[in-house]
Image (cartoon, rainbow, N blue to C red; front, side):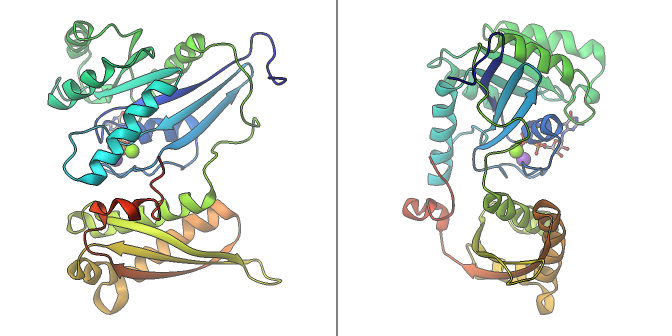
Length: 301
Ligand code: GDP
Ligand code: K
Ligand code: MG
């Protein structure tokens, strides 16, 4: 590659771990821009999201993978396949675990997946702000026995502890390579996807426990208004049941209005333009099990 210069390092880094260990929080901290959805609900990140960190002499391309977990339905199956395939293609894997929780079935399941993969793996112990320093060593020791990790790095993605050190260790581990992306680019995801994620995030946050993962957002239209500093965005929120449609719409449309209001603010920031956002709600029964529809909803392999 003509972009490659001596000493320049680059590579793809996959972040793997159970839902809620802090993968998106880490990515957002590193990239410094809200590109990955953050939520305390499990599995809100369904697609691969790349964040690109460019420093003087290196480029790190992060992939925020869907949480690996035991599949319960077809969507879970699909997510798993995407996640495991990703592991084989990247230069480095960050296996993120939660310092607050011990080694569990979830971690065991992921370690089993690692057996078929030869990519180097760092163990990243996150949320160390939640544990006493004395508790850390036993956690590290217990993981050492389970897998020959190249590095074991305790961090707090939320507060930033040790994140710089981790980045340094990642860099020193990457191969010499080209600059894949322009230095000012932080994500290669189309804005369209980020917009649907922002809307989905608002809907999930505002409806709390009432709406589970059975929610997708499709962007129907995004168009600059003739001669105006205004972008028209039309999107449809897809739920599985009529009752969920009722919750999303709310009393006299109040919930949908609030979702739209909050999403619009973020979308305006993203696009740097005024936005007119129109939201629709549609019931699509059992959409998660309809593989043929997954592609339409943006679940790309
Ligand atoms: P993901 O499912 O792995 O992407 O996890 P998220 O990034 O969405 O984080 C799940 C929850 O854990 C959120 O409420 C985060 O604020 C929280 N969290 C993430 N990292 C840390 C951390 O270092 N310390 C603490 N205390 N909380 C964290
Ligand atoms: K999450
Ligand atoms: Mg996430």
